[in-house]
Image (cartoon, rainbow, N blue to C red; front, top):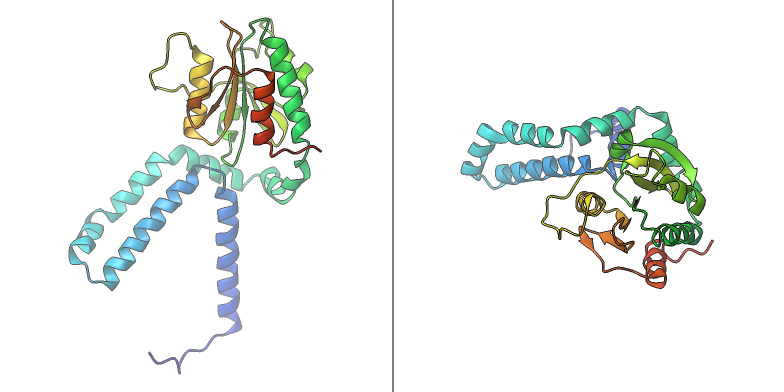
Length: 257
């Protein structure tokens, strides 16, 4: 290949730099959302299309020529809610600041865990139901609209008051985001998997949210007072205070600050 006529100007460098920055920030905005799966799917289709051209795979090229646009439209339709929410977040200054200053809230994991444990062991003997969801990499912001925004420090007193049966938020879930209570009284997706009849809506919601995201859910039964941890759609056996502490400390990385 002859490169003798190849000339790179400062405009070319600027052009490539701007495109690189846009792609970088797009990936930062998409990280932690299920909309990222949409762009991964489109990326795979593009790579297959390029390979088909390079290897002269005529049948595959024919399929892409006839149905390539349809594949992309299907992906957009399937992930339309996540894509819409991602685009909304792009325009929110608070979200950008959160990404830039996100490390400010790191630390204090042991304190958060101790407050959760204390609250659950106040609620459990009284057979007061509770559902606490802790966000990981995948954002749970799409569920915030169904609850009451709080952005409060995690304390056992606040958690017990939220789940008090006389309060307006006790039937919903609490979402902990960045080691703060982001929202209370939140409605979560219910799992469609078969479940023992002794488990109620809270347990189904705990399984549902962990099936769709990488969150961890802690649920206290209103019927038995048993406390269980749910992760990846799988529910643990009933946990005592010691085992619950081990689970939460492992989740928070043993942070003792």
